[in-house]
Length: 128
Image (cartoon, rainbow, N blue to C red; front, top):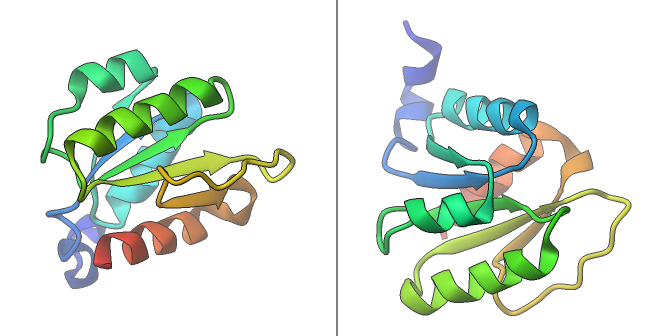
């Protein structure tokens, strides 16, 4: 049996995630981890690329590492949320950096908590 298609993972196949990560190694790794857990992932390197790829209703969740451009990430969040109220927007951050909770993001996930925590939080957000 294909491990990506186990019964627990097939339940997530309708969940589409837009992943924005500048570092190609981390982007590929996070995408693969989410895919191994049954999520459909579309990855982009920059917010500009993500903006071009995004269409209302096409994604259920946007997962963005905002370490490099936090102001742009918040503006992107506000832009997307104004067009799609049901969209989940999640900020990834390093544990060493404080990010104030803003009204736009649905969650802030510390990267130091590891991939299993990321998958669990994504599942929880998409189930709400």
